[in-house]
Length: 346
Image 1 (tube, helix red, strand yellow):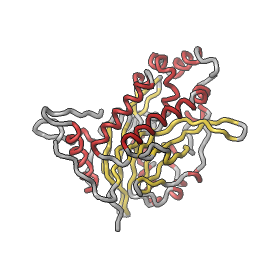
Image 2 (cartoon, helix red, strand yellow; image 1 turned 30 degrees about the vertical axis):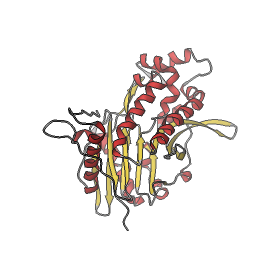
Image 3 (cartoon, one colour; image 1 turned 45 degrees about the vertical axis):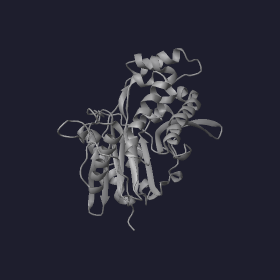
Image 4 (cartoon, helix red, strand yellow; image 1 turned 180 degrees about the horizontal axis):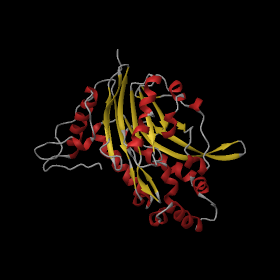
């Protein structure tokens, strides 16, 4: 669980900035780092307080939010917006160029009209019965996401795009179920979206290799050839959505990126088996794509019978091998990883 305890007489912003500076230094030097919560003054247990330090030209400073979702977050739009806003504000003392959220972080906007019913449900079946009884235009979960796709898009642009504009930082809003026309049909896709520091859409990408749940939901796959790396402060960033990362085809498409981000919502307990499966995803892709840094970013928590677990991590690949630089403190709670990509070689 992400925790920050302010020591008496210390101000929050400088303290967090000092923690972030230590975290950045650890990553740049290749030292293992668990999470922000591990860096503290041993004498007091509080954060080490020093003024913020400016980064070097050409660096890319990234804050990766391992979001933990729960029923209370869907009580209202203001409740969810408050949670996301608070997490973004926790990142700001680090002076990030890019703040990232995991897969499905924006999918929950479509469920906000049914928040009270979802909070009371112990399973998806119970939640659907309750919601569909009061929603005559919907027959199933897919219909609910289609019905509220426009609402979800407006809300995610208002919230994540607004935060990007307000704080002049690029923000990755995770993914959502977007409705789009395909011939005579309207289809749903699992779409990741990133906003630039002016709050405009910088990049979007649809998931190609769907999970069984997404297929049952009636989602359509995206097109591999439409994906590409995108620029954040002149640095080439690439992303894949969860199951996509297991497939070698992405190495060709995303070759040459400097940071590859795997956005995950893993619906299985994070056992040793799952940990091994994670190693067959992003760490296995970096050598083929010649990408030096890889970030795995996970959704955690639970809602209406769903549960998500996963360990967020940062790895560094070079011809001698791949090593772990940072990982979240827990696979089943909230955390934030801060790290800095060093300037590109001259």
